Length: 165
View (cartoon, rainbow, N blue to C red):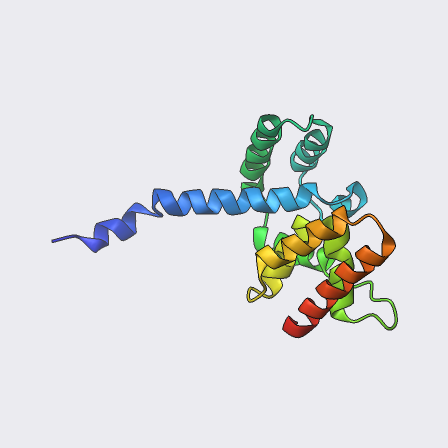
């Protein structure tokens, strides 16, 4: 017979701790995508700001950046993560609506310009969207050479997002 009382007293499992660590790293990665002026508005600890700045100065080497993201994730333990997530959503939300633009058009521009980070934000907002289709359209938009082809892909993305948002 398994004693569940002892398991509850032992604390979170190793898998749960890893999930939390990966969430902290993902949040740190979102922070590295922000501009310095946006980071200053978030009221982050100085050590975390320095680590993010060091991340930007690292070469594009996968291992160096991966290790720095792990370090940023470790520093994230000392922050108020729910509050930070809320502030990040406000910064990343398409709040700069131009008159006449729909939500789908705003998200289309963001996906075509920023790519995978905005696709992830969009999928968090609406998990029913197809990640693969969004990425395919985003890649086609980057590869498109003439304006007619870019506009055709932009319209496909707007149509897809309009149907689902």
